[in-house]
Length: 498
Image (tube, rainbow, N blue to C red; front, top):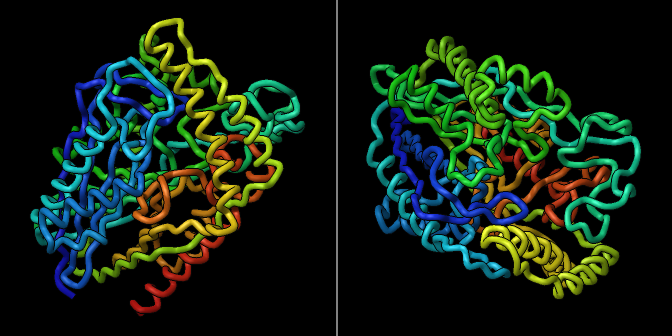
């Protein structure tokens, strides 16, 4: 086992051109840049094995993006083990359009950068950063630990009554099939409000890197909260990760920060039931002129920075410069969520209705785009149900690329989903390692698309957006198989080390 080598690199992937912004139920066009979008690469190598982490400020990682980044890396330097690259999204809803593998089924006369152009730019920058990080490898050390920071809150509200039977509203506004007792971002000021579906996760998992002289060079920050405080704006932004980077660089100099979202399919930065108290906090703390989402970003960043500093104060007493690394990449076959005949019939009718949906002809170009892109999302959702029903018998499984990495007494485990936190806790609770970092929304070169939620059984029974076939390619059965596969490899790696 050779000494550890560590290499960092980052790139700015912002653009001043108008570009589409994904992550909502309609398309937005950027009107400028609020703060930089960043991608960051970290290489950890010990001569026997290696891992290359790559984090990108975007909403999700599509399978084609993984393939193209790895192909470009191989062209730049064939010696780099491109199969060892783990690419994750920070899940900002204010990133550029990387949906180059999709064709809009709506027209628009709003000028914007083609998704292919922006995507090619991101691919080039990502491959360059990986190659640079590989070349930047120098002897160094690692230290790890965890702190506490409330960064995310449960966003699934459960009612005593069946909300879906109240009539009206809901995703699609067509079938009443979306909501049940559960509603994503449901109103808690409701006489039928019962409880949140589950809790949240306060842990901040941290892996620090140091040079030969034990000087801090950067860190992985892994938390259960997607970066979507500013999800509805039309300015490019890294969301609260921008404030985290500013706070930490102010304190520690020009260090590298690599964000990872742990399981957070049912978590977001929003507080739902304490809104008045939160508003007063933000007004007194940041001033009445500060917007809610910017105050929320600053508040989260302060807590993460405090956790970073507190954890660093004691883990720096255990900097390791010789560590075993073992990196396993495996394709797992997860059973797809089956579409019922009832759901198929509902969405066949919905598609027929949407076929005659009239494009908006009045209003500004952006107003027309908002309307027509929303109809496009509805059509795409219904069309997906119909297509999946017709192919599910001959294509019952969704292949997924999974990475499990052992670094000393800690481990990393990746998945492609917006994973509900229960699955993370099942993995961490059974993991033999001292600390297990879960990386959600990590790209998979196999399997179509990217992202999609991974709900629990109780969520599927409660329904609500994020827990219905419209947003689930894999359901609870597949989720538990993912847990078992992950735990099995973790045990295998741990036993080998012993």
